[in-house]
Image (cartoon, rainbow, N blue to C red):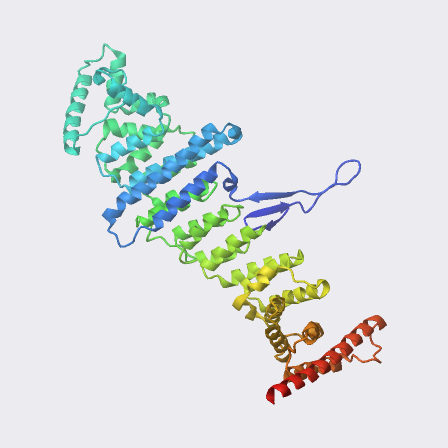
Length: 580
């Protein structure tokens, strides 16, 4: 097998292929392996687009604000991220044509939301003892969808305490101290009743009391009702340690996981991630998620939020970039492989101060420029960030493409934008060649509105001025046209190869009833004609070119000499008459 790296994937191909079949002919296969396959999921595009807006908003929170005033904002942003995840899950439920992807994507999104919610409780909101258990109950309840509905039914009934689901949805509003005192008194009372066998006559009531006391054996006997070890953890805390402190969570989490899972079963990646969270090991959570999840979206956004909460300051990577920036760069690089999501990646690179610009410069050059509209989008991004090298590269690519398609106006526009004098000269030559062949200019609007851009190269300057001559002539401003025409040759702006065309353009002006060229101007035209004929060796006896072409050139020269002589005589007479 062999492989080659692509901009966002790997191409794998067979290097040794044994042909099979009667004919003995065949070919090897090339396989494309994408590292961020989820980026191409239509459903998850909503996740990427919506979370991008939340990410950009998070970056605008001012650093100088005190931590207490920023905490509610961070919690709100965390909930916004979770709401986007849940919206994607709901969309998956309604997207019947995605059934083959439904289970895998939903399970991934459920796990992501579960982990994020726990990180929000433990790290971002940092719930204290007392309210911590309430938050954990909410966390578990979010993944037991029927609890909220059942609680609503209990509260809306005539006698909530007598409702059959009352004990399944407990809740309270006491202070931590009040609750702790009442709970301990109640716990001791129930324990006393168990000790004196008050409920021995009713086995079911006895089981209920054991559950309320948090009897581990009884809870484990009914673990099929709980489903997961972390549900068992919250249940155990509720009935045994309702005022648990954050620092004590890791002990209960580890013991519950050990008790709940079968000794022969191996813990899943999700179990390890949640356990790391209960141990308040943020970096282990991020590490485990990076390994377990199949894209960088989760770890990049969660790490960014935790970094803003000042929870990751001490963790730098050996190669210079901190953890936040490394993950954002990886996520954004994956987005750049998508035909439209690459635009979102630009903002992520912008907010990576150390290596973001370098990555953007490398990635932006790999964006395929299928249309001029897309090229203009890329160009605008580069211009806004003063990426001059990339601007020139994009403009050159588009100018060459336009030139190959014989779209001279577009090619010239791109070369001007690239400030590429050499290429602008080449395209100006093509314009002049077309004019010589057809007698008219194409893309007049562009040439007429060159403005200061015509100074980019001498040939472009000549093109613009020559077009200006034609406009003056068309407006019958003959003297101005004549002056401009002469200056193009005497100032050496016009290429000598084009002088014959200019002198031929002068013929109609020389043959006007009114004298247009002065005597001095006529002398200069004569000098230009003689310089041209001597350099090109245009004489009656010249034999270097075909006879027909030579005859045409000689005829032009003779007509010009005759017209110039006649105009000189008229100019001298006119100027002499004026002087007397």
